[in-house]
Amino acid sequence: MAVRHFLQLKDFTRAEFEHLFARTRAIKDRFKRYDPYRPLHDRTLAMVFEKHSTRTRVSFEAGMHQLGGSVITLMTRDTQLGRGEPIEDVAKVITRMVDIVMIRTFEQAIIEQFAAHSRVPVINGLTNEYHPCQIMGDIYTYIEHRGDIRGKTVAWIGDSNNVCNTWLQAAELFDFNVHVSTPPGYEVEPERAGLYGTDHYEEFEDPMEAVKDVDVITTDVWTSMGFEAEDAERKRDFEDWQVDGDMMRAAKKDALFMHCLPAHRGEEVAAEVIDGPNSVVWDEAENRLHTQKALMEFLLLGKVEE
Ligand code: CP
Ligand code: NVA
Image (cartoon, rainbow, N blue to C red; front, top):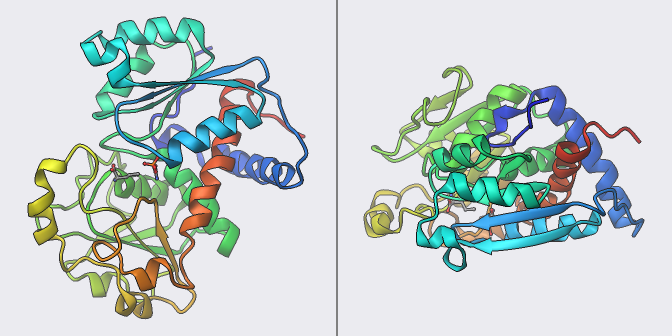
């Protein structure tokens, strides 16, 4: 049987996410009750980081330990990858020694190449194009706070980056709408975003128009990792795309504010919003742990029914 990978959100069906979310609820509940659940006691996760991380590293590492397994963390600069060993050779070697791999890297093509030479499941821990683990956690967080996301509207304000692309894939999978407002020159590229079409999102020149009566406002840094050379130019271009109190007031009264973190207060979001009553950013971060535990369980043990 072909090995399953999680390289972008649409690698899984809605039914599979429904299973993952049910398992997340069960695993989270046991964790909160200090009821040990260690089905992966003989398994090893290798993580490869070509970019910085706090949440992804801690959530995968803690999650694998809590499930009873072991973790090896590799930073590019300390490994032969940093000295030019071909990615396919690294994939062939690592995946003979461990049971599952998580990679954070630059182009999606790199993780696809790794997966093509892998004997074990590969998880995308962020690429330039996608961040599926983040949005899996975010959709779960929305459901925890507000229930079904089908038919709701999410406003994306800012850069059409990896997190935006993945929200757009989520809109197709879970059948909700996204209002996207980016500065000119930073618009969504549907093919790069891996979309089936343009039915689930609408683009707005004016961010204030995009947030009117929406259920969620979300944003992300103006300059993603790997794009640091454009930072000064981006700071100028994105100036009017800060999620502030006026934007939150234009959304539905109970609208949620979401952000994958790390955040830059005073740039893409005002402190009063991210630290305000509608913000669920800490729940999003925590749910990375619980959803990824369900993901690793699924990839290694299949559909566990308890
Ligand atoms: N949101 C997220 O992936 O955070 P890190 O970059 O800290 O892993
Ligand atoms: N878009 C950001 C997300 C960080 C979690 C980046 O790629 O740097």
